[in-house]
Length: 265
Image (cartoon, rainbow, N blue to C red; front, side, top):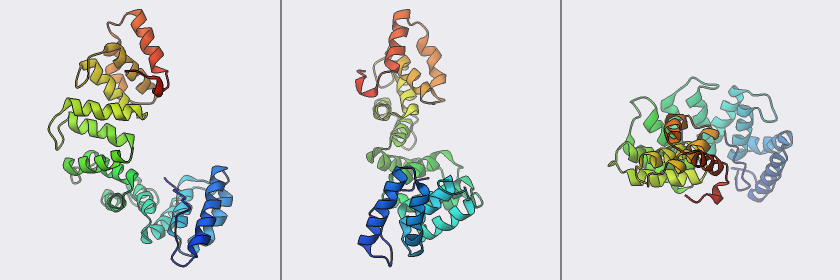
């Protein structure tokens, strides 16, 4: 749940300069971990109709930040914020509908809200909409649209969308199968720290699919991906380690722990 407590938020009736200053104060408070102070600032702004302040209060109730977790109040505040047109609020409200928190679970309503936020340029919403178009029930399955929104999110630097683009090209979902393009997207995602992207890049190096076959590099990426929480890594790690010499195995372990900036694939 994203507070996105930007100083650029604007209210319908409040003075824009005052709003920006107060939002900046609240942002500084959250940076110190002082959510009660931030909520005290957002409260009057929210009642004055400032959508971003309403969103931030809703997000705090959703996550239990400075207040007791209360999904009903989160729903109330996020609904108000979304009605002002606040993009982040639409995405946060979509998450409540998707998870069924404070409201009956509703994929259709979640997708509608994610789409509204995505069309307004919200990268996280674009990413989630892309995921829904591939991973939820058949009523939403649309690989062409999934590719479009994943590409939009990837252009905003969202690594998970890059990993998904790799899968789309690998599995020929609405596009021609293209191992090189898949591996190129996984390389970008891996460099940005996405564990599943690292796992798939490791698998690509293991198989020589779109990238040179390299068992040491494959093992290094897969070890790193597993450490990062990727469940995909376990599918390929044993195969990558088989046949490695003791020195090669040690090299893979060493490389897996290096900062990404120091990697030299």
